Image (cartoon, rainbow, N blue to C red; front, side, top):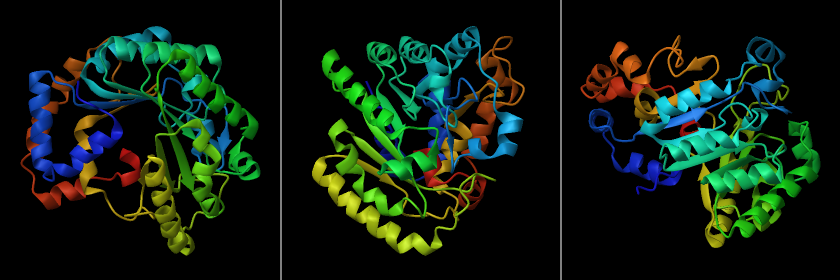
Length: 340
């Protein structure tokens, strides 16, 4: 089976440089019934934390968006419609998936529909041993854990509501569950969002969390997500220190056999990512209670296949495949950080 982890797909995306060729490839995959999509799913617009850099700490955003959640029958229907086409399913995107009762069932559904790579994105605070055992039994491939500090005070201040000891207890529990199950997976990815206050701690990630066996460390410079609790959003004064820290961490990761994802090309998010246009317009299926990929689509009354016909999805792929390079570059609004 094709290895559909993020590193492989990123390498493939970089290897095929022509976006027109990529759009043509997606069209061919859609015509032939091959897998090509990446599903990012928030089963509930809810979170147990109010992280300072996140829109959940913005009272205006929270009042207007938080609360909706899928019913179990809706999740089953969405899985039946979208998962047979998916190369990857990420459970959790902008919200906390463990706030949805029965979240391991989404992993089960993805694997029952043959999805090659399934990842859970979480702050790990609400993980329990029974749920972790279920995730392992269902075949979860990766768990991505957010850790925005390598010291207790910084971690708990930036991730309001989280507890440093609980994080370590649950990471140790995950490692023990993997040993008890006799398997190496799910792979552990650590997600670290950098700001001016936690930058100096970034290089301690392996010394603090290496005991839990991470396979990947992901470094994201913070983005401005609105009226969040964290207000020191100008990273310009820290760019030299950021570059040096990434270089040091890269060397440590290489020595430890840990993969490093780090945004060094555009840490201030000033540029469009030309390689993201195909992902954004052809591959990504973002699903949340307020919107199942396309505005107004109700999976309980309509089918995904009919929806693609109604919006002229294949015609749009053919049109994208004929656009000039400058038009394609102007069309993308995602950054490197968005596609990892």
